[in-house]
Length: 311
Image (cartoon, rainbow, N blue to C red; front, top):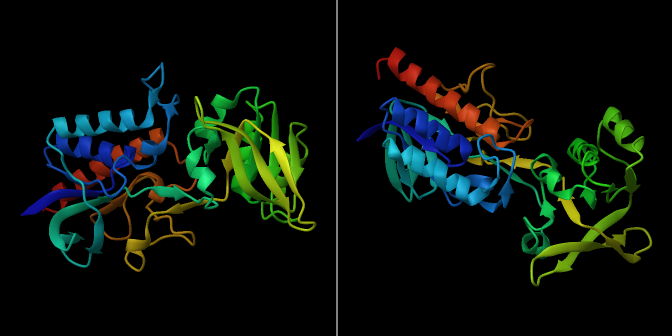
């Protein structure tokens, strides 16, 4: 059976694409992958998504997204796509060695924040440890936080956090920053930001009972080897994001980092009939609401493409 639309990925972009495609009677099939719901399933409170004045837990929001898409006929498959073939029509994808075919494809595989690999990052994830200042900065009003990183991402996160936190430490493992000069100047001239160089994060420490809470970090001076404790309320890891696009290398156009390229004002990739939405094609905003918006765009683009090409 040839599907009208197959959607690879199930975060806000994937489920919104499914909702619009289903309401257009395209009977979409969503491959939810190994992390159904995407990054929001590992997020606690979401307070910046329109329509939820009291906030909502990330997993609960994704459950609502899924139910709404299924209500109109979306089929959600809890398997991961392992291979694709976009060289001819219908397009082919494989999950657990089973082949599926579709007239159009929407890619919503998202991006993953890069982490340092500490076990304590996982332990306190969503409880004082974050990789998104725009998402979580509001929870640290009047508190002391630290940003770890040395590129533009770290500078942007540190600068943004000064709107909420009482003090922001910017901690970098080297003496020099990779960030652009304009971003460095903005941060270094901010009285609320204290820069700590030649320091690496050894451990995030905190309380586990009765509730998980970050209380500080253990830092190591890379030159002297001295270990010190820095009291903190929050930790932001800002060493970049990695788009989940490895599967499409050599098939779809992408930038040097791996973000899929789309034609301006659309979600169309370089392969006609294949569309990209959400964080896999967005290196700038990376928000649930922008991902959902491009998911809507991808579904409409796919519907029009199928209609115009007689598939």
